[in-house]
Image (tube, rainbow, N blue to C red; front, side, top):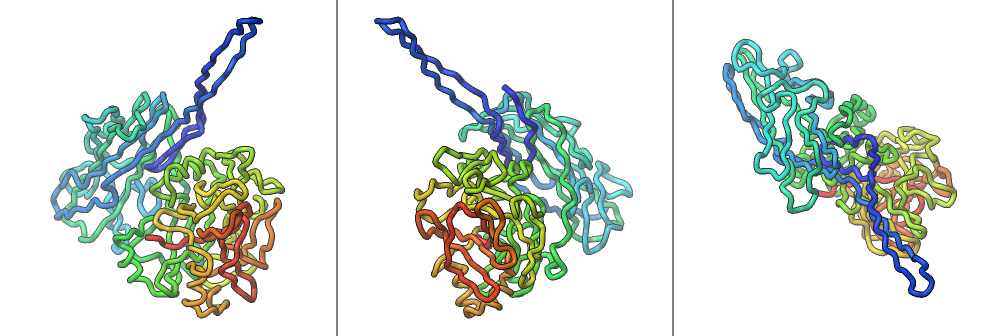
Length: 493
């Protein structure tokens, strides 16, 4: 069996590119001429590894000056991996998207009063630490590394904290390998009051002997001067849930531009609460799934997709008659039959190129063109003439989704009701660049039109989309699923 490079992803991870072959042979001997007839069956079993965490984003404690408190919060990490050579779990501290910055920060007070990582329980230096414990009742035991069985400094670089040398069961009834993290902190007598925040990221790699992962680069700056205000109370698109949605939207002014980041690649996106009260992206999605690291980082917790569709998206499911799915090749051919995703202008232009004609407060970036199999995250990949129904999943961040289309869809409602069918006001509010599309082997229409997928079925080959022209808006048009169009997301919780 040959192994590929280590797959690296935060928490949820499925690496399904390594195949082992099982060969079954049977023979039948003829009674008349002694000629053998051999039948061969090949069965492949992909590697599937994942890690999930519960209890995260909720570690809060009140620590009085001059006191020490241990066992703050509790996160349980559960890992499954059928790689026969096992897997490893790494940890790294970060603050405000800066990896390797292991301090607790109070943004209101400034860096002078940061709380550094450390294990002191008294004295003049405030500090915080982390500790890990294995679940002794778990079916597949983990081994702790580098002394993290007791309170230790939060690592400033990716550091191995636990590993397993052999595979675990991926079955739904397996207890799996479990790891629990807790935190401790000491506050000296002069530490100013306030709320201090820091984070620890846990990452799985496999096999156990895989190289140490590399921290992601520093995040890009805010998208544009027109939307350089963060959404109050959250950093990432995936952080808005049904429980905090009302509070967050209540703190936003309708029509104003804000920004959020996508956890999957740290890209910032302009967003706005528009007429009707929904939160819309003002930018085209530019998630580059031709990048294997980004593709392999997609999980059901950071993307609006279920597990079967995710497997389809990552592994590809092309057959001779399926023109919508192939995850192995990164370029469409002239008939759009070879692949289901492509970067803007057939990779000739950057996904961050600004469209020549833009409206409103969005960044105006062209983004990535997706055919419908890619836009639906591998969930809507039918042969020509074989698909019916609406798309339930897509490449939008978790808790977001494609808008609905057609006469009763959200695009048309926003246009006709929210902005009284006024094309200029609508285009300005939604910030629709004339970003063009992709068809017949090249980018087309840049500067003259914008095409934005919806989730709604219209015919055996087509889906509804929003069509924007310099002087008009057509919110109920439709397009063949094989063409590459832009993708917008709407908060869906």
